[in-house]
Every structure is written in structure tokens, then in C-alpha cells.
Image 1 (tube, rainbow, N blue to C red):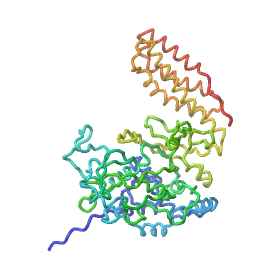
Image 2: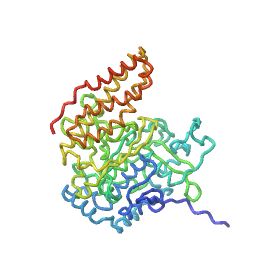
Image 3: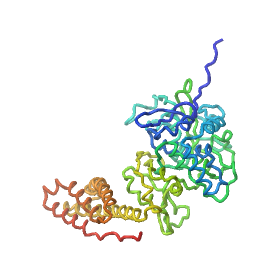
Image 4: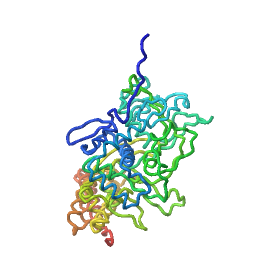
Amino acid sequence: MPSLPPPPTFSAADDPWIETRTKTHYDQVGLRTLFLDAHTIDDLALPHPPAASALLRIAVAITARITGLDDPDLTASQWNTLRRACLDQGRFTPGAVHAYFDQHAWDVFDPIRPWLQEPALRTQCDHSTGINTFVPGRPGGNNLAWFSPHGHHTQEPVPTAEALQILLIHHYYGRSGQGTPRTVNGTTTAQQNSGPLRSSVSFHPLGRTLHETLLAGVPAFTGDEQPPGADTCPWEEPAPSPQAPPRPVTWPGRQLTGLSQHAILLVPGPGGSTVTDAYLTRATQPKQITTDPYLTYRFTPERKNIARRRTKHYADASRAWWRELDTLVLAQDEHGTHLRPAIFDTLNDLPEAVRRSLRIRVHGFDQDGKAIDRQWYTAITPPLLNWTQEHDPVKAQRIAECCQEAEQTAQQLATVAKEAWYTATHSHTKQHPWTNKALTRYWPKAEKAFWQLLAEPDADAPTAFATAAAAALREVTETARIRHNSAARAVAHAVKDLYRRPPAPRKAA
């Protein structure tokens, strides 16, 4: 009698699925090796920024477990001393790494506790969602395949390593609206909430090695009271139960890894090297309000709804990262409308060598609030902690003034470009093409002016940005100005208006 093939298996801890970079060498590792070799790894190299942002949160939670930085009884001084000791050690303790990963279940296809999945979906959903709906970019259902070779009849499997990264994207950035129907306690519904990071942009500390990155990224405990052992990550718990009461947002595991609004179950191919299908539906845990340590927030005090007065800063693929520098370098004050990422409040206590070299990794996913994914993006800032208000208030204020001036000049450029178009063409349609084209040309020039203004503290910011805006407007109207005197006159008046705008008032440092 022929023997049965072994059950499919894939370990998130020990099978390779995470791309990493060390100088010019790229490799793929599992979570265990990621921590054992973190001191030799320069950075993560995942191809999808939202997956990298999600993985950093998971890795930071594990970092806190391995190092003991998750102890809520530590005072601020004790916590900083422990983190400094971990940094001075130069690597994660191998024994602590092995002890943690040996303690928990990491099999992606385990029938009882699949990693970051809910096995109950096999019976609670009367059909699967389909691999094409699960994989971003593929057309699902009967949708037309405009830019993809996949279709309703081509359900191509996806490598498990790639499927795990997609799994993270759904958990953190998943869509809202109608999903696959799920029946729990006799009630069937397909309505799902959006993921906790949907349409957001994250700012992560980036050290010289992954070891520094993860330790710098651990958020400090700011709550009033939390019993030791009360906090758990999803893989540290028994098999999830839909009947379980909602868990509080504890620090750091639940805060960083346990807020998903989506329930997922992957269907393996032979041997577990591929995923052939997936269940993707609503989670039973309610959406909870919390402060993510890597997001920036905006306050609108005049809103009547108290819950809507604070909103996260939304990702915008067309917006360069340097335009957020004022939010990152200025500390919060009682009259401020922006709140920088909470993780910045812990970075001043890092060792001097680490702090001075620390950069910021930007991960954004430009989405609408429901189902449309526009574009994801990433960027790395230069070392900027020495520019923060705590270390150089004059520089921080200069950055804030220049950012404000750049935005005001952009608004003025949009206004004068529209007026010039109306004057030159006598057309009062909603379309005024000079505006968008001029703004597209303006922002790269404004960035160059911005860095020059930081290098020259006495230079006049309004004049510098007005010069950038004038050059942009002249470039996009060059043909019209050559052919039509009316266009040349209109643009000349617009340029004068750009320089007439009074300088923004200088705030006290």
C-alpha cells in the first residue's frame, strides 16, 4: 500500500521568505535567522513597502520579547539602560532567540494554529475567496484583466514566501466593504472593516544594521498600568476563537500585531511551497482606537465628533517625503495641530553614535478608505535627529518655516496659474491645464531650493520658492507665450504676483 505524502508545511520561523540586504548581497531568510544575523544585515529588502512596514512591526514586537524590553514594570530609566545594554552587546543573544522561536507555533499550514490565520474559516465560509482576489494586482471574479495575464480561469498558484508577504499586507492595509461571507453564531455577514494602517504612511527608525533598526524601533510603554504577561501576539495565543471577548490594546504585542480586521486562511499546494487558494473575510474583533508609534496624526479641534478630531496622516504618492519634515522635527505643543510619530520620543535616549547615524525609513501606501489601491512607495531620509527641536531648535524652526513657505507658494502658484489661463484663453471651463503642469514642475525645484535654504540660514525663503514657482510656470507656458502675446502678458503678471506675496511671519525659535 503506497504511503501518503507528508502534509504540507512551511515555517515562518525557519523557511526563507524575507528578503534582506547586506551591502550589495541579497538573501532570503526566515524569522529566526533574521534575528540571529540581524547584526550583519544592513536592511530589509522586501519588494512591497506595505509588507515591509507590517513586518517591521512584527519584528519589533519579537525584539521586545527577546530582549525583555516588553516589561511594563521597568521605569523609563531602567528601560533606556536595558536598551543601551542590548545595543552595546552588538547582537541578539542566540539563546534568547532560539528559546523564543522554539516556544511558539510558526507553521503557516498547521491545521490547528496556522501562523496569523484562522482555521475555522474552512467551515465558517461556504466558499473560498480565490487566489486572484488574494493577490494584489490580479483581477478577481469576472473583472476584466486589463494589465494582467490572470483571469477567472487562470488561478495560478503563488509561492508561499510571496503569499506570506501578501498576508501581511491584508492584515495591516486590507480593504473594507464586501468580502467573502462568514457565518459566526448563526449570523452571516460579508461586511469587513479596513486594516489599521490603510492609506497611511509610516516612519521607521533606520540604523546602520537591522539590529540597531529593531532596537531603535521598540516603542516605550506609556500606559498607566499593565500586568506582566497580559500582552500577547496572535501566534502566542491558543487557536483564535470568534466567541472570545475583545482583547484590550496592550503594549507592545497587541498594539503592533493584533489589530487586524481581516481573517485569512491560506490553502497550500503540494508540499507547501505554493499557495493555491485563500479565504479572505472579516475578523470578529472590533476595530479599536489606538496610537500607532510610527504614524503622524493631525488634530482638528473644531470638529463636533470628538472621535474624528484626531486623524492619521494619509499617504500621498505625489507628495515628497521632505514636505513632512516640519512634522518630524518639531515636538508637540499645546497649540499644535500635528503630532509626530511617538517613536521619536524615545530616540533622544539612544547612544550618541547610534542617534547621529539614525535615518528614517518612509513606507507609504496611497489608497482610498475602502477598496482602491493607488500606489505604494518608500524613501530614506538623511540622518535628521540632530535637526529635531530638542537638539537644534533654530534648525527645526528653519525647517518648519521653509516647509510652510513651500506649501504657501504652491497654493499661490495654483491660483496665479489658473488666473493666467483664464486671462490668456478667456475660457472659464473647469479645466485649466497650466495649474497641474506647473505644480508638477514646481515641487522638484522647490526641493532643491529647500536644501539650499537649510544650508544658507540667512537666505530669504519666500524669494527662493517664488523663483522656483516662476521657473515652473514659465516652462509649462513656453509654447503659449511664444505664439500668443496675451499668454505672455498673463504669465508675466502671474510671475509678478508670485513675488508680491508677503513673506510668512517668522516664529520665535
